[in-house]
Image (cartoon, rainbow, N blue to C red; front, side, top):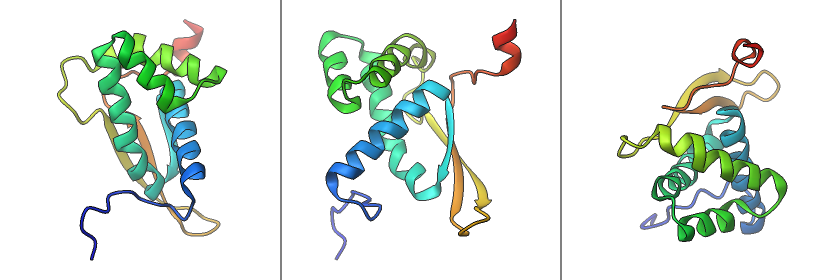
Length: 132
């Protein structure tokens, strides 16, 4: 039976899965969109959306919770700052559904289903906006 078994294991043990979610979430926050496998994107969505919920609350406790979820390295600190200052305020009026998953087809090498996950409200940085 599959009752109440919500965790997608992704064929990894707990510590590897936790670090994978941290790294994917940090990359998603930093780059605004990432391309990964469909299974990883589906596993990342609830993790990333809970981070946005913490960012919308924007108090000391939510910042400390975000540090425990993202880690305390330099990438995580930079990601947390971006989350609280840019991504969460952009989603302030939205009641959920902060991420969008777009299926991209199969990867050429091993036919793994690929997907792009991105923020619904946050603008994606492009080269044209960086030059301007």
